[in-house]
Every structure is written in structure tokens, then in C-alpha cells.
Length: 116
Image (cartoon, rainbow, N blue to C red):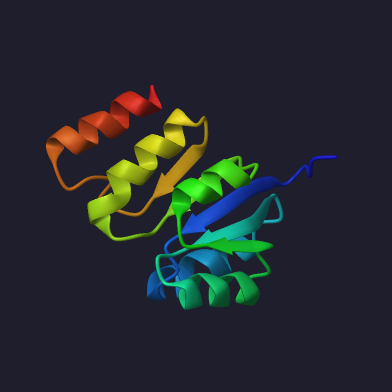
């Protein structure tokens, strides 16, 4: 049976996500952090352990393929926000991204169009 809590994954496990975003998410009863993802295996693993996520990944596409998610928080470098965000939206996920959502106006339009 599926949990009533929103199943959310964090992409990016650096300083800001682990000191601000993930601790804040833990205060919201309706959210369950189910997976973490970072290119650095150790960062993804450490964040998953610290914040009780069930799994961790180094490839967000693999995570999207394997997890049943309601949404994703993108706190990776800004240069990949559009790529990851558009793919997440195309898969029907809700997206929260750190600023900026894109590095270019064209990327921002792609992001906007995917959200429609």
C-alpha cells in the first residue's frame, strides 16, 4: 500500500541541501524523503543515512526509473537545473528547484513549457 505522505527525492547533496533544505523537509509531516542523488557517491550515501532516505543514487535518471516519486527537489548546480527539471516534469513529477531555474532565457522557456 502506498504511503499517504508525499514521496520526494533530493537531487544534490552538497552544503545547502544538507544544512538547510533536507532538515527543513524533515519538519514537514506530509513529506517522506525516499531517495537522495548526487554525482558523488559518498555525498548521496551520507545524506541518505543522515536523513533516513531508503536509497541513494549517483544517476538521477536511474532514480527516476526505479523510484515511485511524487516530486523532486533540485539543488544541484544551476547548469543542470533545466535538464533535470524538464525530465522530471515530463515524467509527471512535481518540481521544486533552487534558483535560478535555468542559466538562459531559452532554458527557462523550456522549463516553463514542460510545466504546462
